Image (tube, rainbow, N blue to C red; front, side, top):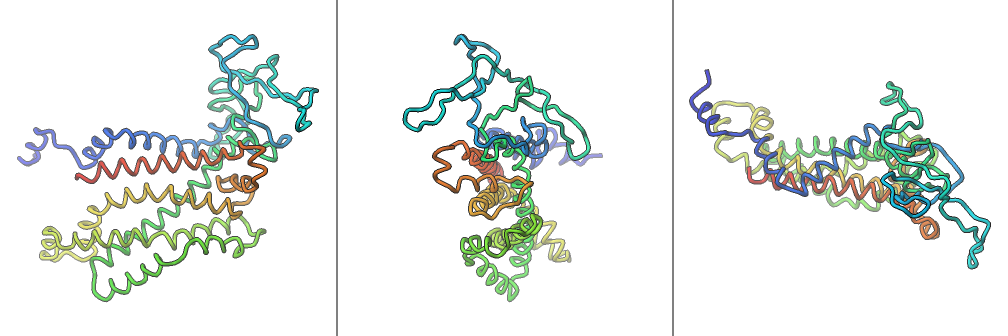
Length: 368
């Protein structure tokens, strides 16, 4: 039989902590937009084969400008069916550059639809399929964001690249969160000489110049090194430098929580230090840790993209946003083919999504 307090709480419509946070998060427009985008980005990474309209490894004839979606027919009238007019070269030359002029081929439109057939794949390496979320109904390889220098579809490669970029971010954040939270909890609760030495080590990590280390990465690992070595090295370096700030923040909260009444009561009844730290203090620190996690993921995504721009990226056939940004290192190429900057859009979208979700969670968690 439920206790009188429980019955009274139910009668008053009492909500759990998670329900209270969710109710406040739903009032945040930015937080809900971030949550929707995070779910979409994660779904895109998990089901990349389904979302990608073109085979990301299919090479054609080099740079190709993005195909334009049009709702106009060949006569200029409006139509409810979206279509793509392929760009073809004419026999005329540009009087300034002497390059062949190109334009849309209105005689051969390619209609766009949802859940269309395309290249074959195996979802999770097990489930065969050839259905894609969107694409040309007749199988035409539509390039909505253009192609790179090898003629590979940028949109499809960006969708597939989310797997490696987000995998690195999630692994690094998992390691840094686990190490930083544990060190901060133990250091703040134990105190004394252990706390002093632990914080001096944290000061050393925080004072370490990260940018010179990232610049030196390109020379520490040879170009011929396998991708697995690159991934392991990047994860280790980012994890080794990323846990200290969280540790300092968790330590400060632990110092305050170690003096509250319920912790003193647990000590008085003989509870062990491990039980006090992980069952009494940790739950009260988790709200801050959750917010920090949502804010650290975009930071790691930006770092991976930055390292890729410097030339320190995964090796083909793997795809990441950092690898795709290597093509933007030449100014002349960007001027002639500006659509190769499209991978920046994936990075901006993911950074905005996680930051917006983090801000919404911070506002929702703080009052409780």
